[in-house]
Image (cartoon, rainbow, N blue to C red; front, side):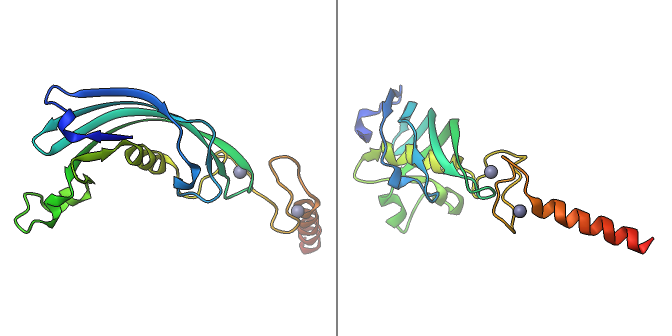
Length: 169
Ligand SMILES: [Zn+2]
Ligand SMILES: [Zn+2]
C-alpha cells in the first residue's frame, strides 16, 4: 500500500482498513500473524515533513523463551511518527539534526504504509517474549513444562536437601 505524499494536504488524509501482512516480516523467530493488521492512520503534511498518527490492532503467535510453548500476543497500540524524504539525508546542507535522523524516511514522494505498520508491530513485540509473567519454564533436568505439571527432579532435590539438613542437625 503506497501513499503518494502529494495526496496529503495540510488538512490531513485519513485511512482505515485491515491489511494482510506476510509473516516473514516479523523479526521474532517462529512468529506469525494470527490475523491481519487493523489500522487507522491520519497523515498530515507540512512541505516534506509528514506526521503519521494512528492505531493498530492485530494478534501474533510467539514462542515463549522460558517454556518454549506457543502463545498469542494481542497488539493494540498507538503511534505518532514523523517521516521525511530520504533525499534530505543525502543533502549536505541538511535541515535535520542528529536526533531527527532516527525518523522514518520515504522515497520518491511515496510512503509505504505496510512498512510503517510492520515496524509498529515489531516495535511492540517484546524482545525475548514470555507467555506470562509467572511462567515457570521447563525443568532443566527432564524438560517437563512446569506450567502444566511438576516433575520429580525438584522433589528429589528437596528430599535430598531435607535429608542433608537432618544429618546436619
Ligand atoms: Zn512460558
Ligand atoms: Zn524435571
